[in-house]
Image 1 (cartoon, rainbow over the protein chains, first blue to last red):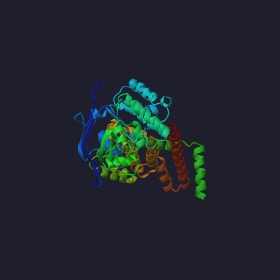
Image 2 (cartoon, one colour):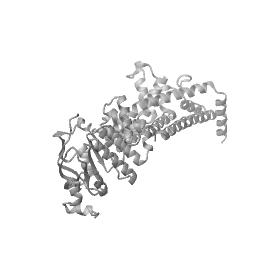
Image 3 (cartoon, rainbow over the protein chains, first blue to last red):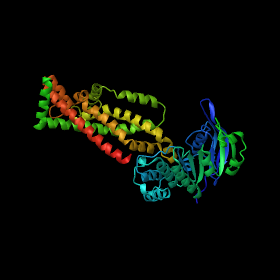
Image 4 (tube, rainbow over the protein chains, first blue to last red):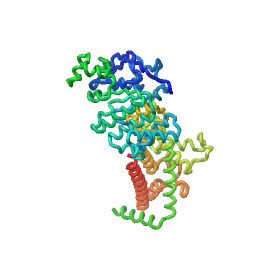
Length: 240
Length: 234
């Protein structure tokens, strides 16, 4: 068993741009286990926070650390991220997965086997040889998830993965996320969709204007939100 | 008008009779320009892609210089290669002046900046789409460059074709370093220049028509091949 890279600690995280703090002094710690949903209206700083956690974006100040260690290539190997718009290479469906596995230094025979497994788990087994860019939007996002799953990350970041999908495709994507969670991957996902957060969240971090206003278990958050902003957001009022 | 119909006649006659001198000129032209563009692609594709992906001080300046080099006057390139390869020049010992090799060198220098500059633009656009995903997957800069070149292959063909167009159509550089020696370094463009200066307008135009047709055939073939591949891979 590999050693866990979690917990992930975020301390005094700030992202400054255009004369304001888009992420404003965040502090939290993410443990193995519960599915964590970063919830909040558009512009709350959810995506920026996710990118800084994953190391794609350099914070203006503050720190992200994994069990006290700073970001490194070794730690990145234990992480994966799925974006709002799936970025697929101009290769076959299976080629997209074997490419990612090759980057992790997996040898050729193992690559194919793991790719086939990941495609089967996500219902794309029959499409292995199709051109990835010719898939429907829902299939493309499932492929992005299959690619992430094939890497067997300890933690998976998802940035509004269903924002561009219809309900049927959303359902399939959520099922895959749940399956990965059951297989032991820590899920950290952003969404502005309250219903989706209800379906998937074990714990909620509620962000607004770059600040963490509330953190609680899903049950607590949806039944008795503490902050006024969260109450308004859950009632469907428009926050800005 | 008279000249045009005469030119068409001359061209048809040359092609139908498969004139041996003409065939020699055509094949030499193709050999030189295709080799030069091949070399230019080997140089220009990685340099252009690296310039698109890597961030280093002076990068912007380099991009501007590269874009400016697209407009290099062929005569100037010819002159520089002439000076380098001339008996007294630094590379004079190689004895390459007035040989097809010298012409290939000149055309490579002329077309590599075109391939590199267009590649830089194409790959940079692709990089904005791919950057986060590739970094997330842990791709090194070198690996990213290779991936972007491969994924941009259909668009990059156009960059290489632009280089070929330049090589096949220029006359100044090959004239200076090749010398337009019959049966040795005479290519289509230098032959056209010669026939025109001799007043053989019909023959010159005939050669021009053949050059144009060849260019059309090559571009058409590449387009069709690319289109088929694109349909297969998205």
